[in-house]
Image (tube, rainbow, N blue to C red; front, side):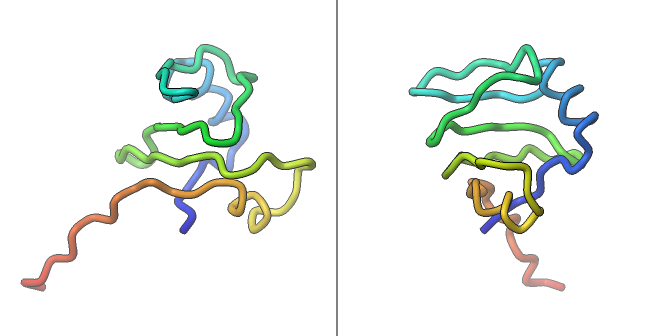
Length: 88
């Protein structure tokens, strides 16, 4: 199941360069200080989007810049879905 990610490269660069994204690599968590930081298979990212925190794990690395469907296959969402309101 794939969660939302930034579709605007400018917004991604701004978030990555401003420390708004946390990267966990080999059990060590750091804030990304630059947008060109390398990630590896198994790394986990946490970032805010639309007022919510999202977490994802890198499952594979892309070999080219391709369509969104292909990109969604490179990661898995670790988000816990919000509880369903049974009263509604």
